Length: 206
Image (cartoon, rainbow, N blue to C red; front, side, top):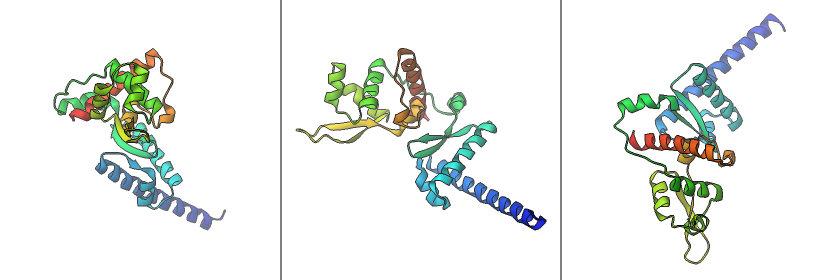
């Protein structure tokens, strides 16, 4: 490679670095302002890159946040990403937020949520058949906490509502997609219960 070629290569890399930093700044601004998840495809459209390249830039942003020990991070939720506070920062947020309301993810709520997560889309009747008791109160509470949502109606007499999990559910349990849901044992269930309580309580009270 000649000196001229080396100079052109350095110039090209500098230009790529400038463009990447600009793309990072644009996506960071969008994610911060939205305060919720944004589809990767939409971000790709905004920075005028393909989805593969956009994911690569987002991964670089996430690594930088970790390496610089920042208070924020990027989380993946299905085909979307969200800019959020690191869990270890919650204790500091509570100091400036109002006093948290009491939030308890009871065994009944957790059991109902687990059924919905693994069986979705599912009706109340199907949940009750599995649990053996009424699920009306549990479903209403889970809807209130935004861990589940109505996703349609079953094509059957009475057209009962179908329920499924939300992005808030993914955030609360620390998974990118439903494909990552583990086979629960007693220890995991208790850990997920505590994580979900902390996440949802913060979302409700800040």
